[in-house]
Length: 212
Image (cartoon, rainbow, N blue to C red):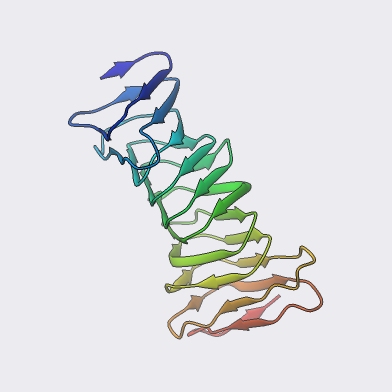
């Protein structure tokens, strides 16, 4: 399927692909809150993708992908051969995972990731994530710098491995804690905390820890 403009799909059931989808403009997908969207062909090439509604959503893009305002009632998985960015607020009830290869991940709007968030890239490429509420990090592997800017607690359910510098910011007046105490964490670069005066911080690092 090849579309030179925008593409909008609405279904009362699941949305899937069996071949490459190329859309030059904006892709808008709606399958209903109980139905999955699975566009997992690695050669797909989207511009901006908006998920109006969907249960578990899987997106693969051979190049960069921009995520527009999206509401996902299940899990969200995005794999791209280029940068992953957001142009609208992402609301995900389940777990989220973003893999960008040797490219940056920039999710800097007031998103709401309710479940754990996994992040993966390589090389000297940075990752930035913003959450309007508490943020739980899943398995995180970042080749460049890692920045978290959120309102609420920062916790983890997976190992965090950062090659570059790390900035953890939850200065919002709620005195929420930062707890990254997994015994396998590795923060190779500097680590900077920006918190409220009443926030507790707990961090474990298997490497030498350099606070800035």
